[in-house]
Image (cartoon, rainbow, N blue to C red; front, side, top):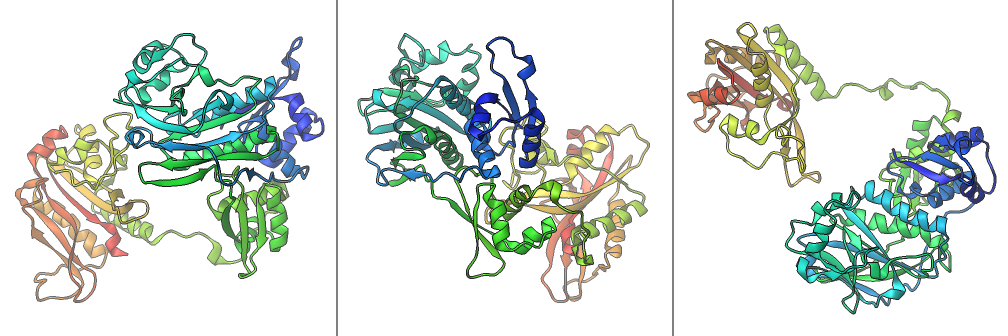
Length: 590
């Protein structure tokens, strides 16, 4: 969780009173943050004491003193949630996103703060918030980058485009020499602050660049701003540009910046929007979008979680302390309609609303209660009960359970099993090692790797696993799903088909699933196996698919495979034995 250092005197002034260390520590505890350190006793001379406050990682509005003070004042009832306004509602200034940006950094949002009055500490806070957001939400600028400019040094309208590095020439922030894109990369290569961001765009044939109407460079996101438009204490009108590869996070960042610092505008909490025009899809929108999000929460759910018996109006008062505007629904008795301000991007579900109600009520005020009905006591999911049955049956057959990792390399999941990539594996975008490239689509790699590490164990080695695999499915919202599988391997000096088929028979007998000798004529529920020459993981002529009919007269479906593993598979995994395996989808028994 981020630790935010704030000026102690400034914070207490914003809160309207002074606190002892113990009092402020208690206030932080009540609100759900933590006072990490008070530096009063360590300060010498003119050094100003600081409070170092640990805040939740998803409370982006509390990454600066302005946000912490606003949140605590609302919690204490000292102030209302700010009423953010856009003026004019129909913006005169536009930012055009050129088609050329889409291969590299395609999203942008923007806003203007007019009549800003900065002093040194508010200016420092403005810069520090950008740094905190870059490190936290923006993932070191890979997802989002922020640029802030003195609007009076630039000429609207603005364009955001991508150009070849040699065509981008400007004087970087706090430098005296103009450079093109290639020279800039070389100049900052060993810079301890900016050097770590160069990789984001360095190898791209074009670099993103923010330009004004005169083609003056304002910034080279996500690396550095131009010295031409740098902000000083004398800046009165601030133009903020936010660019990124993630539209949602881009909009969250622009909202947090204007929410925290529009208080310094000539008209407090007034923001001048920009019209964003996208050439890619010929659409336009207004940013920032300051309209509160609408959500619903069940009154009964909040009361049951907190052990309360509050009305909708009473819960609404608790939520008001946490910046949420809630009112009981006029159409449904058990619902609260909740308006979520732009500062609270962390609210995603009614459980988050319930948590805020708990903070508003006070965690230390909650009474210990017990469930008043057996129906409220958690019980195992049906698939977990099936898994336990499979584990017990496997162990009774003399097999030992293993629990390998769910991640493996791409080769282990495909090439080493003599399979072609079927595009069903979920791939990690940034794997740290070659061993963790994909989420497994079969249990076999993990079991085989376990046998490899224990190959000096006495033979035969009989092991099984009952665990999840993950398969891609673009028709689902999350585009993938978990499936519970069971698999076992018998490894030894010899390992015939009959060894593993005997275990399969034991499992099916346990699951009350009979063997069907003549499945074409026998339409009962049951299972059988058929040779499958496409199973290249197995020795030729010794691999089969397992077919299962769940109900009488139902169509059969393939639920797994069984066979003697091919010698090449064993060589890939460096196992000097023969082995046979069986794997099936355990969810068919639900």
